[in-house]
Image (cartoon, rainbow, N blue to C red):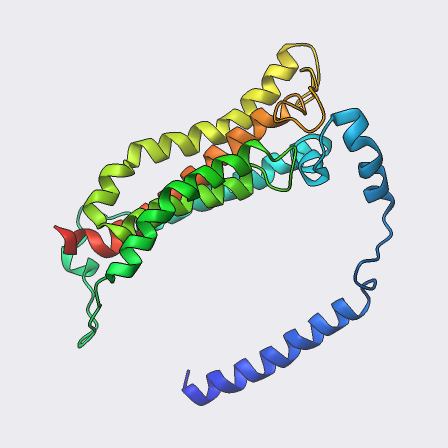
Length: 250
């Protein structure tokens, strides 16, 4: 395909996509206004019946918790696919992992990047843990907090090098955290069944409104999801760095 054909294809695709977006957004309600019977029901039962002050978390991990289980395993399966595609074959030549672009010069990270990245590691971990553990109180939860936690290894790589990154993020540890986090969702639901309830039925005390112990089983689900998301994204990052940098660092 020539460059001219690609440009023509891009032009027509952009126009078609823009028209679809225009049709979709033109029928939306004005900003700040919305009418939803489902939303009204959620707002009515979230605090009195779930003791959760963040309606999104109540929907994700309680009202439609079984659907969220499928969403979590979408990420789990995606990470497995990345690892399988990026893995090195035994008979694969080492030269295939080298950067073959001629004349390409990669500048090392500056001192400013290293210092800022180093200073941001601890606050990033602390903020990620906060978001995971307070999902039932404030906007956040396991998915959002897990993504924040997964940026800490990236900051470590930016302020150090690949060798130190591998020491701080062992492959077996991140694989175990992803697997255990994904299994925790199923184990919690199975425990509810074993105790005589339905799958993911909230059988624990709901706790006090506005506290991190509110929501019964929801805080435990949040912890498992946070562990799975942070472990999965860290594993994907590790797979990419192994593919691109392992030979050079050795």
